[in-house]
Length: 275
Picture 1 (cartoon, rainbow, N blue to C red):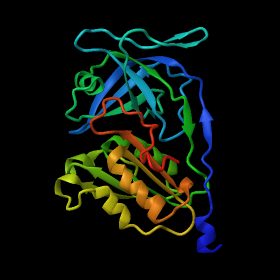
Picture 2 (picture 1 turned 90 degrees about the vertical axis):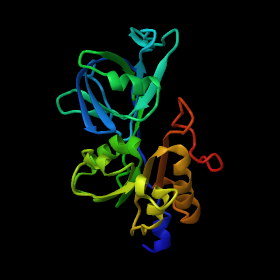
Picture 3 (picture 1 turned 90 degrees about the horizontal axis):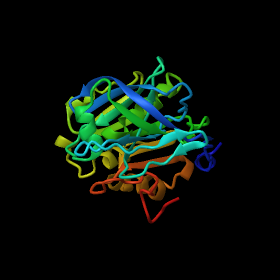
Picture 4 (picture 1 turned 45 degrees about the vertical axis):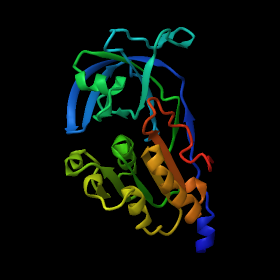
């Protein structure tokens, strides 16, 4: 197969749908993985929980810590019942455990939002409600290589991707973090992990600079990035416009957007090229 023929190969991204269900969760452990990342472990209504896609997300519904009110959906005989009142919700990557519990990692940033405030005071025994995932995107079976990365908010999904790849495919991982304190975040071994420190970076967009320094390997593969939407736009434009890679080779997910309280991560990273 010629280089041109390889570049024209599209990867199949299989999708799986799940029934939408509200689940009652109970905190069983709180662990600080790094000075900026806190893992909360949950047990509860998880017997039929399914999350085969490493970049899946669930919605967590948080109480208002000022008023004590907690408006969350419930599970009725005919499906999930929406909550009345002020609903405080955010999307997170679920990390299923072998013991049937569920880990959720919270990035501890200087934000007074409901999720950040709740995570700071989280204790064993507290309860939350989750919903989802509604659907999963599986890793493409035909991908021969992976170049993945993002900021701290993408670490849980990246960990899941590396776990699924195991030893069969070695990935190059570009992680934009504040400094070396973030490097204690646990990641599966056997991959080329490159930590990019914002605190000492000479480039305005350290992640874009790192992506530009990487040569695209032979054969079809996947570029996957998650993080702050605006900073990921030039990364996506480089891959899609300058390198003209097949769209199925590039997945860029804006997990959050600076200045936007409840950013919809389904929104296109690049409004000029939403496909």
